[in-house]
Amino acid sequence: MFKDKLLPFINRHNEISKLLSSPDIASDISRMTELSKEQSGLSELVEKAKLYIQTADAIEENKELLGDPELGELAKEELSQLEPMLPALENEIKILMIPKDKNDDKNIFLELRAGAGGDESALFVADVFKMYTRYAEQAGWKVEIVSTSEGTAGGYKELIAQIKGKGVYSQLKYEAGTHRVQRVPDTETQGRVHTSAITVAVIPEVDDVEVDIKPNEIKMDVYRSSGCGGQSVNTTDSAVRLTHIPTGIVVAIQDEKSQHKNRDKAMKVLKARVYEAQMQKQLAETSSQRKLQVGSGDRSEKIRTYNYPQNRLTDHRIGLTLYALDDIMDNGNLKLIIDPLIAHAQTEAIQEAGL
Image (cartoon, rainbow, N blue to C red; front, top):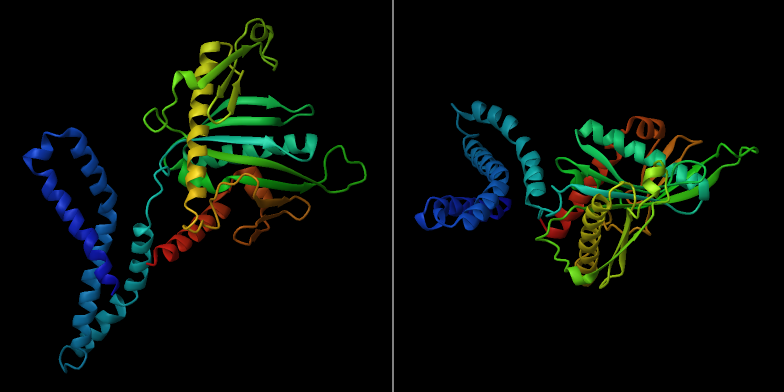
């Protein structure tokens, strides 16, 4: 019975409550914090579980009263209200039972890079960044550009931005991969549709505890900035390139006039990339665990096509096609794609967990 699966969660929640009121735990701040966090994570699930059990018990009681000449009609009326509640509650609980991604609440580094398609690809980087910026504004998130490398005809060869806010990674983690665009470039005189591509990386921001990079594992080079920014940018060796020797990961930042600020930014990005590399390695090693169809984070995977002549967007992982490309690109209405992707991932996770 589904009800039996809920009891361990309720029992654990009660157990934590008892532990938190004991004098031994009160004197151990780190243990108390850990337990409080666990209890907080269980609270919504336990609340729904209790409601589910209460509803299921009430249904059983009313079924027993159906043959009663006095209470039968009342029981029938109550059942008509209670029975539709159970499947909806069960679905909500299953979603809450899915093991939580520890990175879901984190801020992210969003990295966009031009790929095949030359100038048109660089222009599309700028368009996609505008789309993410508008979506972030609607969510109340803060977007800060960390580093840019401009394209020769506009747009960006590379753009790294930091996005801060509630649940940023949980919403944007499914954006990682190759995004393909089909449209007629401004320079195309024959009206032919060109295809180009960009890659998107979504990397959770990490703290020093999660990634330990030793000073002797980093090679730092400084050089003169080559981008726009006025003469003062180019007169000192303010640009910084950090190489993580064990992995070969390289981060170069030149946007700030101060070498110190560029180094700080580069270090944050480097730690995030090293952490992401560790995550990908763990995913590859746990081959017995079936990867979800969405959210593998593989940058070489073609995840989406943006077809401008048809005003069409297709997400290839879940077979979703929308004829609302203008609304998504101009207004940042990414909910049209992100919500179905999350729902799909939840369904996969529920099946994976055998719930």
